[in-house]
Length: 454
Image (tube, rainbow, N blue to C red; front, top):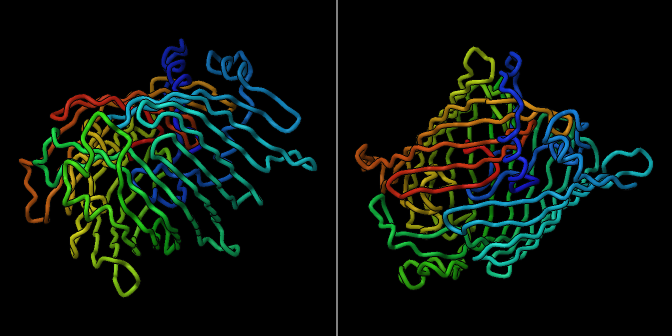
């Protein structure tokens, strides 16, 4: 995504006097699914030039409301294109709050006036990471293809170098292809031990380093049915984390640290059969997305481990009377591994960004996991925003999940329940700014982030 969070916009939207009104009735349409997120801790990139350029459109005239007036006031027009200095903020149970600024700079072609590139630098501060500086650039060779370049460095631990390419119509066909190469170090997750009975008091922070490449291809079969192939080759290891208020994995789990701190090669390939008749790849209001996949890793192909990961996933969106004001969203996921014993960071995890919002990332770790989430997404109001429609939304939710060492060990009594409520600013076509408040046996967690949970 272009932005980590438009907190100011969300707050203004929730305080805006705009009257609540249900959206106009819409017919169900079908949009081919974009390639899915590559790692659960990594937010997906925008999937088209149009989605990226929505960020730099000139705000609507002042008569369009408080949001329009504020954004109109902060936008700077230049001969090369508009500059929008967004405030940014996020929060998590692991790293705490971050605040900063992120100007969005559009560059136009002299000949046609079309946007040829968007540059998005940012500066933020977090007590654990200290200052973080990030450079992002989006380059458009034509209306379909695009490149993303990103570099980031924090005072403590976190690093990133990434190059990404995407084409939705390779050689004029419906074959979609994405290529990515990156070096990434994150200090967000923690390890608590294995199993659903691991203790919160054993929390230990670490940093995860990954260097490698990834290729994703989508092949349409018949209507709504797709074959997805994902190849990845990464060298991974862990090191000391940035959070000093808790133990480090090296101290709390020395045997696991000894294994996980050695550089290991993961060469994996995943095949998925996907059914998707949802109306939107990022902000669905109706339809079903279902997938069955198997990921395999073989030493004969250069991996350090032999294992398989199986996954069944269903996302269903029930749109009451297809009016869009009340959308019941449900998500089911069953995932389990078989094969060699892996470092803990390569196992299925259940936490803040992986299905259980009351807990920190990596809270529960084992060879398999089950997740069920249900939300009632209620649209409160609609207001113009950057020449397109945004919606303020609240969503009471319930997260349910557990982990297990094998499927036969699954027990309903081990399920963790986490009710909560979300306040969201939905900016079509692809952006959701979210404040989640979740409760449960792990305590209370307040999360500020971009994107729907599913």
